[in-house]
Length: 249
Image 1 (spheres, rainbow, N blue to C red):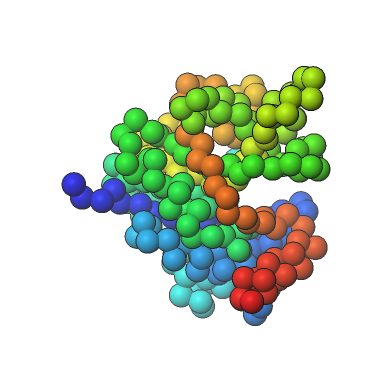
Image 2: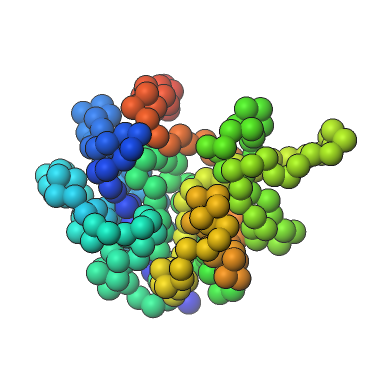
């Protein structure tokens, strides 16, 4: 059987309330989006990785670095909507897998993408997949760290900024999973997502993946042990530089 075609798309916006111009932030002489693209391109399951943006500054910088780029509309409500427009512009196959790769993960481990893609590419019943890793301490309490609880088959039951599960009586076996915001979609599931209106829980938690769960579209959660770090604020760049130096050492 032929391998499932797989495309990686990196949505990149210039406007950010906490970090304007984030995709162009300098990391060791190259913009952040280049590091994400380069790392994602090392995943053997992905045949093409492109940047999707509505900003000419980002597009021009990408072209100078020979990073494939697709220009998209400026009025998208989410990165997933931008990913769908770019996938459609690329003419991806109906049975293709489309990976939504966060543009603020410059130390992304390519093997995480392999883990992410595997259940969708190998199991026809899986429409969407994402990643999670075991967390503890202050990360559990932080509303900036999204938690996920799963069913026995690995499908997500719920995502929340709150502490879930709630631990009664100091249960020693309690374990918390922090969501890693990477997604692999079958193209049809990606299209269905964009056709659905934002859901009640999505608006409450400000988590777009809840739109899928509220509309009975399961999300398979793959547990990973790899560590990554997103860039939310300018001060996160120092953390990234330290991680790069650790990896090089």
